[in-house]
Amino acid sequence: MPRVIFHKNGQTYTDEVKAGSNLVVRAGIKQFPFPHLSYECGMGKCARCACKVVAGAEHLPPPNWKEKKQLGERLEQGYRLVCQLWLEHDIELRQEAAA
Image 1 (cartoon, helix red, strand yellow):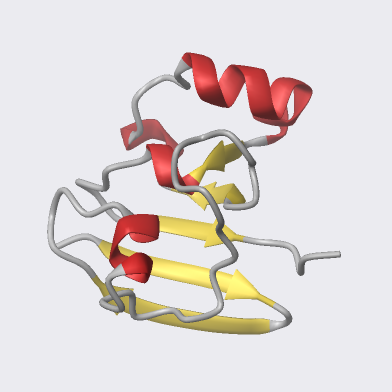
Image 2 (image 1 turned 45 degrees about the vertical axis):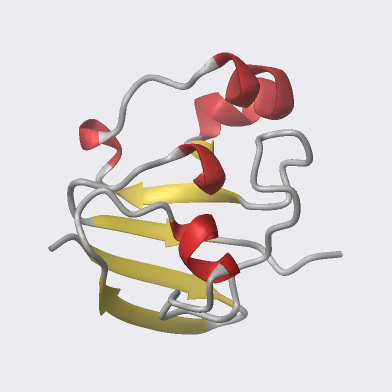
C-alpha cells in the first residue's frame, strides 16, 4: 500500500492508501486520511488540488494535457494535479494554504 506524506500549514500527515487510489476521489467519499487537502472539481479544470511533489515523482506518469494546461511552468517546479494521479507508490506532497 502506498504511503502518503502530506504537508500543509506547517503540519505533516502520514498514512497509507490502497494501491490505485486517487486522493481527491477518496476525499470526496470521505475515505481520505488527510482532511486538509484542498480540491474542487476533481477533473483537472480548476487546479485547486495542485501540490508540489517532494518525493516519489519518479514513479508518476508524465503530466497529461490537463496538467500541462493548468500548471504550465509550475510543472517544472514539481507541481502536479492530485486529481489526475492514481497512486501506486509512496509519495510526499506539499500543498500551500488556499489564498
